[in-house]
Every structure is written in structure tokens, then in C-alpha cells.
Length: 97
Image (cartoon, rainbow, N blue to C red; front, top):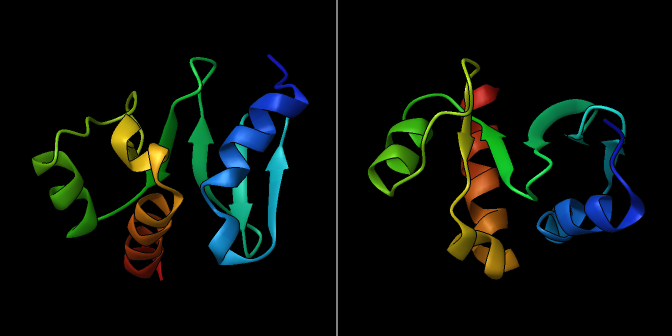
């Protein structure tokens, strides 16, 4: 399923403070520094790739695992405020490096 321009704009908006962001419109992947760091589902939900301790924090905050992959669903409240979403993504990226 391909994502439209509005879908891509929604996903990219959360990452505005991180600089260059690219997207993969066929898979819903959102890349920072050429690494897929988030997935966007057709329900306009974002899922951040994360490891401990960020995954543990996100789980405690009500985020569930997305399918059977190392991605956590981002709460809608974090998406409503791009600063909160960006901060969460920075923490997730730090655990991946």
C-alpha cells in the first residue's frame, strides 16, 4: 500500500527538529540519517524503532509493540506536540547507535 503526500507530511511533521527526513512512500518507512527509524501505519499511527531503556519507558507510558518487530507505537498525545515526539525519537535513536 502506498502512502499519499498527506500521510507523508503527517509523519514527517513529528521529525521537523531533526533536520533532513526522507520517507519511503511504498512501505511507510521514515528515515533519518539513511536509517529507517519509524514506521507509519495506514491508520496514521507512528511506530518508533527502539531498544531498552527507551522501549521500557514507552511501554510504561502506554505504548505497545508494533506487530512482532522492535517498534513501539507512539501515543497520540506525543504526536500532538512535535517537541514531545521529537524528544522521544531522539532517545530512541540514541539506543540504536
